Image (cartoon, rainbow, N blue to C red; front, side):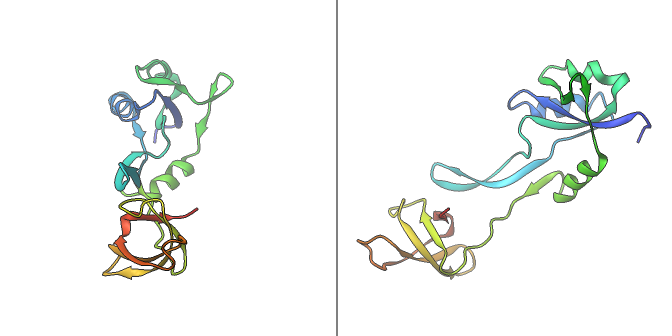
Length: 169
């Protein structure tokens, strides 16, 4: 790494993280956009989603004297995170640690499996909105058995797709 080159946190316009990463990548030594792979709810179903780990921010390593204006005034950039008017260098250890969390700059949050007796809520299907108690997994982690908690159901055992239930927080 070049002596005068440091990591900085660049604030981007909403939804422009990937575009700014690609544009800055042509001008400076290194750009890092950590991504998060998680399950997101879309139309009542859990689907895999990949988006920025820190929405609106990317890490960029560059020489401040040489590239400050190129970075700060690039289209899609709001600015460089600063203390007053002085851009703050991000310690290399922070960038390294975030990189260590993921594979190919993608961090994945794996949801902890349900525990027997745990309170859950049905998020899809005809029992949507019902609270239940998790019983056990059936055939791997794809299907689950739950006991509906509603008074009307009084202990009705139901088998659903695992994606149809969520932790009841």
